[in-house]
Image 1 (cartoon, rainbow, N blue to C red):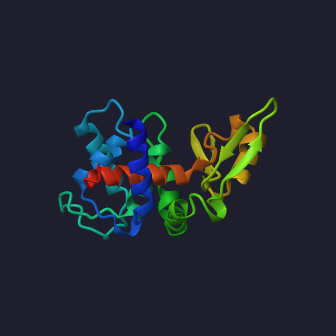
Image 2: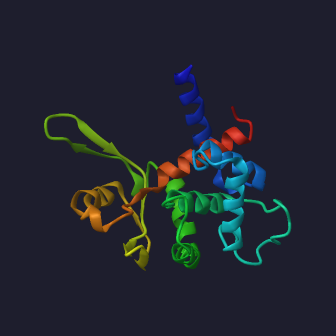
Length: 208
C-alpha cells in the first residue's frame, strides 16, 4: 500500500504543471495544514495568522486583490510557495515584519527561484550528486537550495540577501563550513518544499 501510494505520488509530480495551480483560501488552509504548518493551533487561529500575513502583503501585492473579498483570491503556485517559505521561516510561530518586507521586496527574483525549484528539482542546478561518506556509504542530494543570507543580532534582522539559488554541492559546502551559531537559517531545500506542495495540491484536487 505504501509503495503504491509513493508510485502514485511520483506519477502526479511527473505530470503536474505548477502554472495550472489556482486555489481559494479555504483550500489553501487545507493544503498548508496537510504540510504540517498549522501544527497544534486551531484552524481559526491559523486562519487569522494567514489573514494577518495577507494584510502585510503576503502572498498578494497590495491592490492585487480586494482584502474585503472574503477568500476569493486565487492563489497561484508562486503565491503558495511564498506562504510555504514564510511559514518555514517562523520562529516562535511568527516571522519578523522586517523579514516579510525583504521577501516582498525580493519577490521578483524569488518567483524565478520558486519555478526553477520545481522544474530543476532533478536536472540543471538541482541535478543529483553523491558524496562518499567516510566509513562507507553514499550521501545523495538533489534539488535546488535557497540561501537568503540571513543574519540576526539581538533578535533583529541586520542582513538579508541577496537571495541565492544553490546547487546541492554549493549548499553542502555551506552546511559543512559555516559557523552555525551565526547562521540561524542555513540554505533551505526549495525543491523539496516545491515537491511537497505540488503533492499536497494534487490531493486537494482529488488526485488521490
